[in-house]
Length: 189
Ligand code: 5GP
Image 1: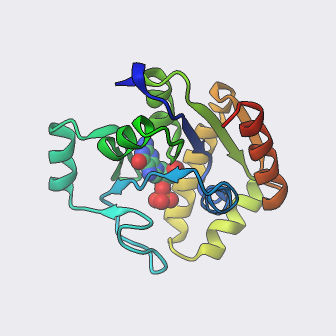
Image 2: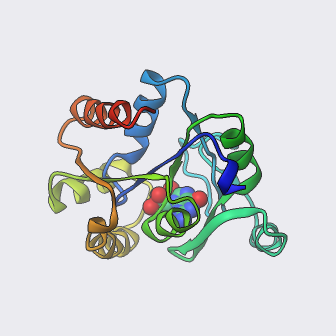
Image 3: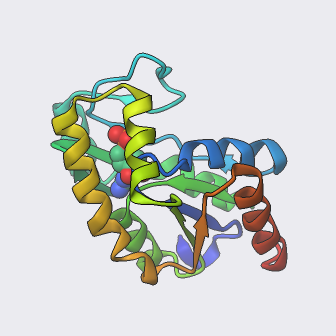
């Protein structure tokens, strides 16, 4: 399948609270030919999240069944929950020549890069650790304990950013999106 793929995968990773979601939404707005993959997760929806838009929310059993049937392009366990990329949608889109954005964690991104070496990997960084912490608090969806766990994971992910093709500083959303679009144009996406 990878051999014949026409479209490319654009992978966006980075710490919780770095603004990946906002950046992807803006990218989609400015580049309407891109398609966004919707991941499957076993975590509970946040109050502002929409079913089948933010994620496909499924039970542990359903997720593990998808793994067993090889229906996921990649998956990872994150904060006691599973997250994965449905394979069929992505493969179909690539075969139609569409470029697909995946917003996934570092482990998933590196798995995908191995199978799809043409993928373009972006790591989104927040301006500082303090800024990240403040964004997580402002989001209001997690307890202080969970925020601390996310901050610890953020550090681990940050240490792997050198494995990415590009690191983008999200000091300003418009500037960061502009930088990504410029890179994609240079790479003829
Ligand atoms: P959140 O719970 O904040 O929505 O996501 C937690 C982490 O899981 C984020 O780093 C997000 O990028 C990652 N994530 C979301 N979907 C997927 C996926 O399909 N696969 C992998 N490997 N990570 C994902």
